[in-house]
Amino acid sequence: MDNFDQARLSISGSSGHIPRLWRCSKKADSHSLLLLNREPENEHGDEGEKGDPGEEGKHGKVGRMGPKGIKGELGDVGDQGNIGKTGPIGKKGTVCDCGRYRKVVGQLDISVARLKTSMKFVKNVIAGIRETEEKFYYIVQEEKNYRESLTHCRIRGGMLAMPKDEAANMLLADYVSKSGFFRVFIGVNDLEREGQYVFTDNTPLQNYSNWKEGEPSDPYGHEDCVEMLSSGRWNDTECHLTMYFVCEFVKKKK
Image (cartoon, rainbow, N blue to C red; front, side):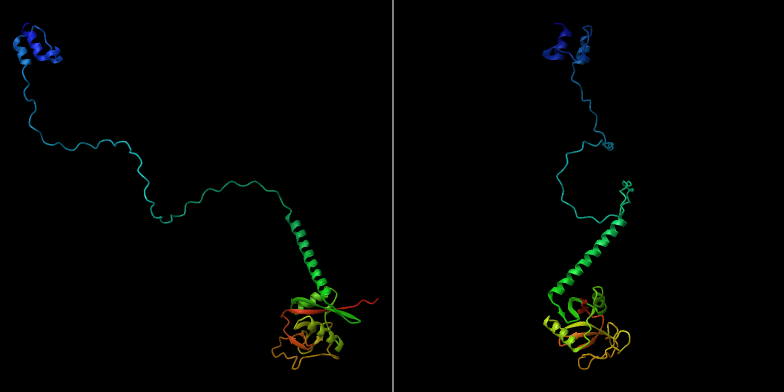
């Protein structure tokens, strides 16, 4: 083994591999090989000064979502948002001749109301009636004021009861008392002239009246209508008050 081979073994070790940079031909002299085989000297210099911080690196990947936090307090109500766009116009509906139907319904309502009134009339007549040779009477058990009572009797072909003699007055008093009522309107008033009482057929009280003691008394001029008490006595009272009343009907001649 010559000097070259010895040097190669010395460099490569037992594997026989020679580093690329150290490969050389057999023509190299032994001095050169010895230089290559020398231990490298310390190539590091003195520690330099700390450099300036480098630029910020790139952001890493987003981590996994953490657990749900505690619900926060309710915030203040925000400002009203902008008004949205107007929606599309709806489809045209079917034209209704509602006026005619309303008229029909209105007429039906009137008919039903009249029927109910007639039924009440019949009920009252069946419940009790008083009569004389010329007339019959019945108490309407509906509270109405004086003018409403007049109208109620008239549209049924009668009038507010006019007791023009003692017999008629006693009959009505007994009727009112046995029906359990305290007072009822009768057809007497001084609506036209204060203090001059007349029956509802405009005949004056010349031959008969049955005033309660001290009546009529109207210090303020407001008591223009007359009520009959269960005793049969008369009392002047205010016309706007509501109470039961007595209608009278003339019997038809046979």
